[in-house]
Length: 386
Image (cartoon, rainbow, N blue to C red; front, side, top):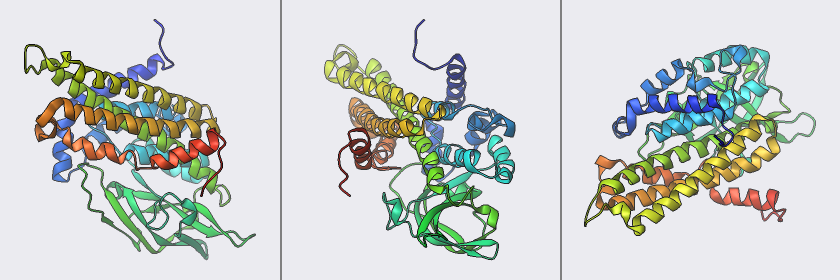
């Protein structure tokens, strides 16, 4: 049988993760989200089975796979109705950056804990006055003896309340030029001066958003990840996996919405035949299915390029995958709601809760406009307007 590029091992991984997700299901997730709970049980079981560390190097106890394997796990859990947004941040961004750029001491201390899913890390880059322009980041780090002292404010930082530490993007002074340059620091959430508060959101999700304040937070010298001069490279090493994982998160959500819609369209009869027999219902769902599968293909391409070490090509594909997945998810969820009619907004069916979540895909972690800017400039060679 001819098929696309995924290996037997990857397909088996998908099937196993799907079975785990189905054991809990979308109703379980929504009950937790509406009550303010967390998907701790799913995280712990997935971690014990090694699903959350498939990308951690084998010498540190992980699966030794790539971001494509982790993205498959993320997609299948979302498709089963138990999306884990923290997967995008902790094993994908933070573990990847530390595995690629961390010191030997950092790798030995942190990667085995990622491998057992015992360690959860958040990622803090967005600031109130920076937004998409990371050059405007004002969180600073200054030397004080052998320590670093961090001061700044971050917003829309996911799942800080569940994290043991945060990978903070700050800036420090370049001794040669006097200019500020980016740097990444591992900051335990219990460090004095580190505080956070939830940002009220009209979203139904178990992983919530927070404002983080760093008020003279003192961390040891070895909290700096890797070299002072490699932070920009480190940052992009984490952002490409982030986009790949977000694309997987939303293609999984889109698959769930289409599954719900197709089942309803097959069984709901208003006149003589199920409503799915009418082209006004069938064609929009079929179109959404095409869009989801195209987004999945681009996501797999981006992951394959990243895992092959082609960061430049992976950056282009990862941005395209994220864009395509966001659009596909919005179309799929919207059409699923329309297929259900009034039931599309009834809590029983769980689709209304997906509307806001899907809409967020067009905004975060990078807006659709910034993706189009990237493609225009880097893929088409058009001039920059900002």
